Amino acid sequence: MYESYYGFHERPFQLTPNPQWFFASKLHKRALAYLQYGLSQGEGFIVITGDVGTGKTTIANQLLARLDQQIVARQIVTSRLGPDDLLRMIASVFSLSVKDNNKTAYIEAISHYLTLLHGQNKRALLLVDEAQNLPLESIEELRMLSNFQIAGKPLLQSFLLGQNELNAIIQSPHMEQFRQRIIASSNLSSLSEEDCQAYIEYRIKQAGVSRPLLDQSCFGSVYRFTNGIPRKINNLMDRILLFGYLEDKTLLLQADVEEVITEISGEVAQRQPTQTIPIQAAPVAVMTTTVTAPAEAATQATPANPYHAMLAELSGLLDSSLEHKIKMAKELDTLLNQQHQQVMRKLEDDKGS
Image (cartoon, rainbow, N blue to C red; front, side, top):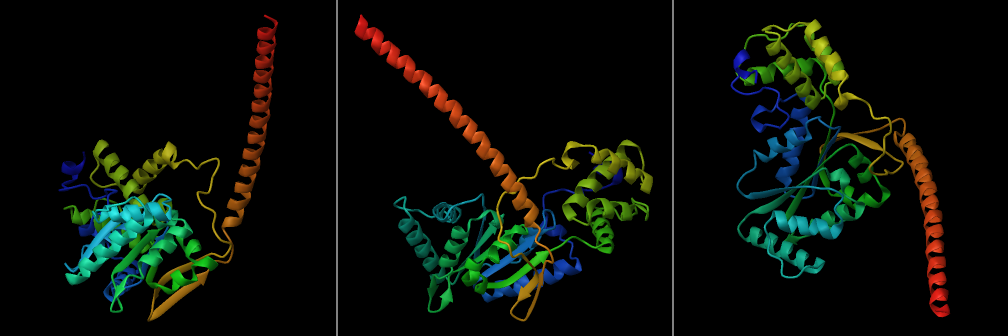
């Protein structure tokens, strides 16, 4: 809508990740380097975690864009898939033909396909997005698939993308064998204030405009509102540029940015929920890994467990749900008794007649 007004050849702040517009902050460069190392090993698991909108998919797309022809990559987006459904999904994304609809048939089909790839001097890479939704049993199924080997050479490598809840799942006591298979991992955090400004200027330039569109004072306001999260930056900057177009401004000032922020803050998408329901219970121990590889590992333990409040709230919700179910059961029992009495009366009337 505003592209021609500013002189862009395309929108600079689209939500859809564009591998050609990869902004290499210090953290993203470091993460990508470790992930490329992990991919070069051709075995085990590569794990990327981070808050919503921190660039996990962008990093993954950047890595996939650099794959050589010997790697056949496929992506799945999980939604609490059980082990059997996960196997069906894997067979589907690799376009495998399965004779029978049972677990053994799917495993045999996957094994046969991986063997064929090996014979062609190729290997498979499975990209699992939203991996925090996977049950422990499904992650264990992925680990079992990583055991497919020929002459000691693994046939499948998996790449897991997930929100920070995935860290807690991986740190579960039952996941020791899986943790030993992780060859490289990265936890993405938000951009620094300096990188936030560089990110905005980079995307504007990539879209075809080299002149300043924002006064220097604007960047601090953008950073404070978005906390340096790229997706939030994209959302806000898109609205700021739209505001400038509607108000016929070619250079936006801090007051303009603050006006847009005030407007956005009153919208439904920005309102805080009155009740938060956790989508998945997590283990008590929570670890945050910044970047991990055989040559270097940095693991920091969070000082406090952020799930205590969530579990307490979940407990309250369960209590409330239980009370509701008991009430419904009583009402159902009363209804059944009434129906029983009606049937008995009808039987008595039939006998009397």
